[in-house]
Length: 242
Image (cartoon, rainbow, N blue to C red):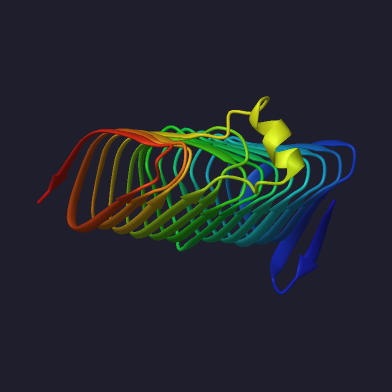
C-alpha cells in the first residue's frame, strides 16, 4: 500500500508484499516484506519481517521484528528491539540495541548503547560506547569513553579509548548465583587508554596512563605511565612502568 506525503511515497506492508526500492517518506512493515534494491526513507518501522536487497539510508529506524539488509545501512537514529542483520557496514549517529544486532562489516557512529546483544565482524568506532549486555567485536572497539557492565560474555580483539571502565554485575545474591552459570567476562587481546579500570577481564596487554586492575582479572602484561593498582584476587604476569 502506498500513500503520498510531502511528495514522497509511504510504503506500508500488511501481509506478504514485494516492492521496489526507491525514495520513500515512511516505510512501515507490519507483515512480511521484501524490497528489491536500495531504500532511502525518512523513517522505517518494522514490526514484522523485512528483507532489503540493497542499501538502507534514512533519518530514523525502529526494528521490533526482524530486518535483514543485504547492503550498507546509514541511519541517524537506530533502535533495535528485535533482530537486525546487516551484510555490510553500519553507520549511525545514535544506536540503541535492546535486541540482537549482527553486522558483517564495520560500525561507526557517535553514541552506542547495548542492552541486548551486539556482534560485528569488523571494527566499532564511536564517541561513547555503553554496554549493559553482551557484545562481540571482531576488530577494534574504539571510543572516547567506554563503559561496560558485564552481563554475559563480552569480547573484542582490541579496545582503545581515553576512559575505559569495565565492571561486573553487582555483588547481590542473584549476581553471585548467576556468576556460576554465565560467562560474565571480557576477553580481549589488547586494551589501550588513558584511564583504565577493569574487573573480570582477561587480556594479553593492558597499556595506559592510570590503570587499576580490579577483582578477578587475568592480564599477561601491564604497561603504565603514572600509576597501577591491583586487586589481590587478580593475576598480572608482568608489570612495567614506561
